[in-house]
View 1 (spheres, one colour):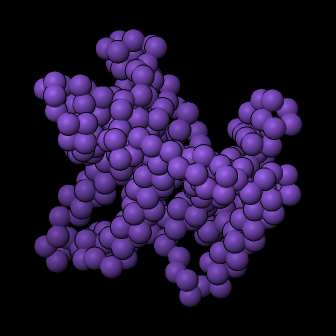
View 2 (spheres, one colour):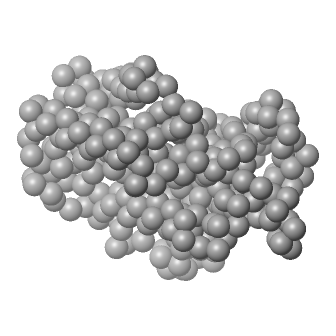
Length: 334
């Protein structure tokens, strides 16, 4: 296993950043060519909103894979569980509790539930399989199916309607003549905050140094008196907690339904492949690129074909083009 976190000083990383920037400029040019300024503003904000949701699933998956070499195919299920845990906590509070208190409690509870279950899965199921990657994939895939079936049994297949966010976030605003929901801006802010926070955690803190050192040479780190297994458990907990936070953050907009984990897992895998399987920074940037691509294709499709069918197809085409040009992803290494 090896942590492969590129830095701004590497020529390949700078080149990928330039390509990503040019791609964003190209998307903006397409938007201004076909849409009014107000529509462009809504498309860009919608793309960032979608990108942040994709990031909240893909980030934990990328971290766990990059540092532990574990491809967690149950990551989408933790996203779904975060939404359902948030609903349960939101509804369990006494009647008359302020909406803001309910919402914050649901966010905190979803993160704790996702992290706790992630710790149980890592210790009880994955830890014995670190040297057997095929078994890891089968296990996490089966776990995802089992979690979805349990949710269907408890809540039914129909799903739950979106919960009400705090009043300050339950508004809309005008931007260049287009209307946009304030809550989506909140999701964008949460995503960017987590992007920066996780990057600083991995690069600038003692825990991040221990994590990267443990991946490179676990025996040496253990000789220094550090429990590497415990550190790896913390990494897995971080990944599942971030996914659960994403699920609860999305709940006021998407609600909660049994299939949401699978839907977001597929897009998260596309994001990770485009960014580079072992690159956290690549995943963060690719999330934005995929979100903007999907939002642009969706608006084009709705305006000219009266159907959003191009939205899903566009990101698959994007992934294919990237892999044809750079098989390791935009920021991946061989």
